Length: 110
Length: 117
Image (tube, rainbow over all chains, first blue to last red; front, side):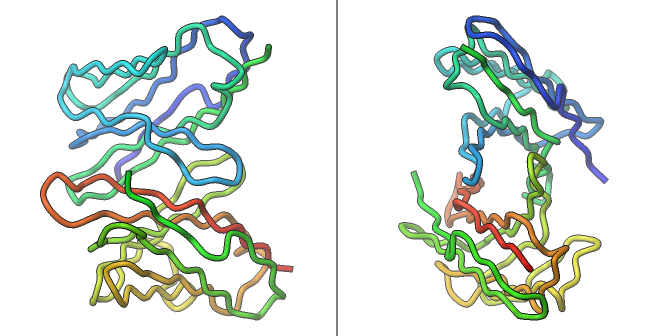
């Protein structure tokens, strides 16, 4: 069974601080996606990383895919209250299914 | 981006009744749709994979007679929770994957909140 361990599960920080969320697995994934989800809504795709070692930036968010395509990280610089939400990583396996991490509940206080 | 809708957005029903949830791809054709279940502040758990015109494939531990899935067209899949009980209360989310090369991305619906009394 493929698992994706996401940490931390809860994070409460002050506005302006930096943070990093990690997703780790013993399995190799074809690609890895990061989503953000608001309460009562479906997840919204932030980024997809495909190549080992790939780094993608989306404004203050930096996403990295591990060289072996088994792990990934999301780094947010100078967090803002609007960044508050549930962040989910998901790895795509060979069968095209998404394996989700446990999620990180981020709260950014003004 | 591609849009996926779900109906209803929330439903409350009595124990023992059946509830149907619709998932539609609005501006693209979806050969495959996925159904997920999510508990409060938890991750998404894949329940089943639905391919147009064929039987759904259920994940281990998911009762196929309890959660009936029909994918009758390239734009519509339905999930019916039969004889619902309070433990079936959850947030159900569908996603759709389109046709063609480079279309591995899944587009998620807004979810349906089911509450069984």
